[in-house]
Length: 364
Image (cartoon, rainbow, N blue to C red):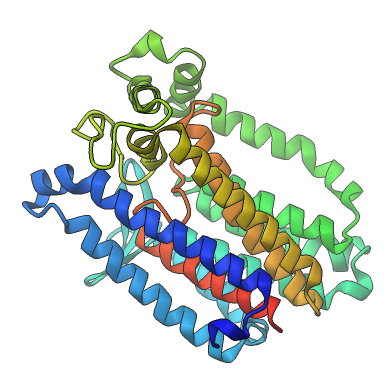
């Protein structure tokens, strides 16, 4: 598919996604070079891996651009099975790899990936398919409401067992939004509210490390060397950047002060080096991306494309909002990467594929 053959929405979406990816490439090298040199004696270690993932994502995206998004519908059930198998593998000893106290990675030989990332993508495909197929009975409790809810509920349960509360909430929220737009009777959710709220209450307030995150969110200065350390360093990065920033590559917080500077808190490094102008520009890019994605969803010529575009757009937008909110201290700390920008191979690959699918839906 040639650039001149794309409609206006697709061209704008492609330009915005390309800018975000380029920002990510530059900022990952800037934020990770010192840490990478210290750990691997190679300042470009993370940059090279990120570029490899980017190229692989572009390769797969090219395949989607040639074949179209409707083929996804044919294999929706296969994708669902793959996502569930991946989530189960992450929990198995010897296969699931623990990082930061959670089993969120699968290691098969030299290949490592994060199942929750492709599970989120595949679930969007499956939910879009099932909502399309069930349109004639979408207001029915057993036929229209329960099938997508059961799939979402089981998948979220597997992710919670890792444990990964942030990804679970994100996937569940995207699924519910898709169900709402499809015409599902939202009153059916009422009987589930009490047990869901109860479960999340225990998951948040009865788990020690999550309770510490909430305490540090409310008053990070009460434990400056413990639970509040990371968010305080993020504040220092954002605050020291001022309006114009310290200059590209001039961050001080990336010098082993701010943990996960090239992943979950890369937005803070953008603020330190590029200032308020840089952070607002990133926010504006994501806001425009979401706006165009919603327009593509509204204009889609088939229901599957409409629901798929909505799910993809909502997922990327929600992750961006959560990441930026965490970096600025608006919500408690949660490890979700900033789409297109944070270091993370699995997430980057599927974000690039998602853009290709949106382009195909727009030009269908």
